Length: 112
Image (cartoon, rainbow, N blue to C red; front, side, top):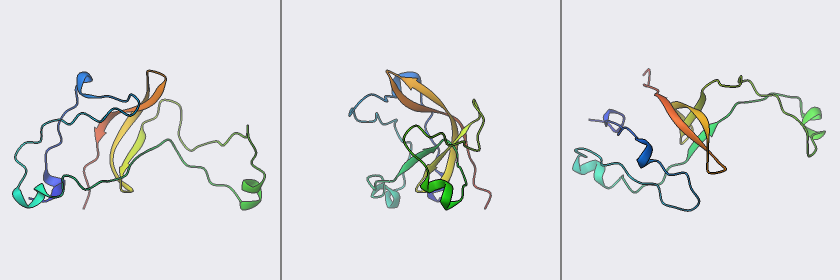
């Protein structure tokens, strides 16, 4: 069984916390093989990508506060959720107590 075969827990509303410095509540993980147990504390970088923009360097150098960068996504379109720069899910931006959060709407299954 590889790490990508592990079942992901479903997150209910009471298990998600986007507030301040509060720790993320962990959902119980079912049947973690002993050889993967030591990987559970390895930190990873989780990114929510709103979109991308491509522009010439000359235009980039002219950017100032208040400048508007048009991204390649439409309002309401799902954003990419990446773990260590690998696409793992898609989601929607939500507002939680005056902070931005992401609700996962789809888990991306690797094609290879």
